[in-house]
Length: 409
Image 1 (cartoon, rainbow, N blue to C red):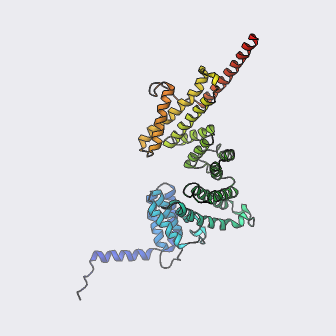
Image 2 (image 1 turned 90 degrees about the horizontal axis):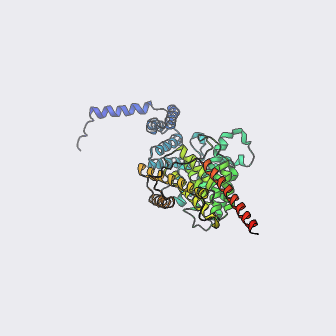
Image 3 (image 1 turned 90 degrees about the vertical axis):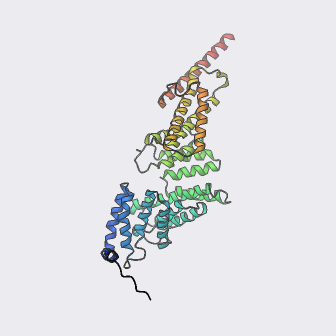
C-alpha cells in the first residue's frame, strides 16, 4: 500500500481555521445576524445581506440546533435571492423550508407559517395546477391560524396588526388561485364555481382590501355581469384613490395597471384615465401605462364620434374639438410609450405594433404630423370646458331649429 502524502502546511492551516470557525459559531449569534441581514435587505442591499444571513444559517445548522431552527434564516435568504433576481436559488431555499415544515405547523415567530408555500406558488416553474397546490397549502395554514378569529372565539382587536396581515395574505392567496382558474385552468369544468367561492371568501375575510373587489370584478366580467363588475371596481377604487401614493393601502403598481385594463373593459374610461394618470406621475418610465392611456383616449374619441348625432355632420368647430382633444391626448401618450419602448428595450411586439398603428391612424384623422403640430397635453379641466361649450352649442342649435319651425308655421 502506498504511503499517504503528508498534508502541506497550507492545508493544515486551512483545516485548523475551519475548525476554529466551527468552534466560534453559536446559536446565540443567529438572531443578531438575521436582524442585520433584514436591515440590509430593507435598505436595498441584498448582496450585502448575503454574508450575515449565510453565517446565521451556519449557526442554525449546528448539531446542537433543533431541526427546524434554520427556518427564519431560510425564509429571509429566499427573499434576498428574489431581490437579487436569482429565482432558481430562491425556489431551492423555500423548498428546503417546506421540507422542514411541510404542514406549516411551526409558529410564524420561529420561521414557520404560510409564507414559504405562497412563495413557491408564485415561483412555480410549472404554473397552473402546481401553483394552485402550493397556494392551497398556504391557504390551509392561514385558515387554521385565523379560525378562532373568523369564528369569533377570539377578540379581533387583541392582536389586530397580526390578524389584519394574515387576513390580507389569505385574501391575496384566494384571489391568486381565482386568477389561475380564470387563465391557466379555465378549461376545468368547475372553474367558474371555484372562482366564485374563492373570490367571495376573499371579500368576506378582507372587506377593506381593494384587490379582493378587483378580482371579484374580473370574475363578474368573465360571467358577462358587467354592471356588478362596475360596482366592484368602483368599490375597489374608493378604498385608496384619495390616499397618498406612499400609503400602505394603495395597491402596488402592477395591480393598478391591471385595474385600468378592467376599467376599460367595462367602459369606465374616465376612471381608467385617472388611474393611469396617477401611475405615470408616480413613475413616468412605464411603457405599459403610457400605452394604455393612449389606447384609452383613442377609445374615448371613437365613442364620442359614434355617439354624435348624425344630423350634426359636418361637425361644428367646438364639437370637432371635443373629439380632437382626446385624439391628441391619445397620440401624445402613445408616442411617449413608443419612445420609452426603444429607450428601455421593452419586449412586447404586439404592444409596439398596436401603438404604431394607432399613431398612424390618429395622424390621418388629425391631419397634422406630431412633430409639426406643436401640440402639448391640455389639462383635463380644459377638456371638461369643451364639453360644456358643446352642450351650450347644441342647446343653441335646438333653439334655432325651434325658431325656424315657429316662423315657418
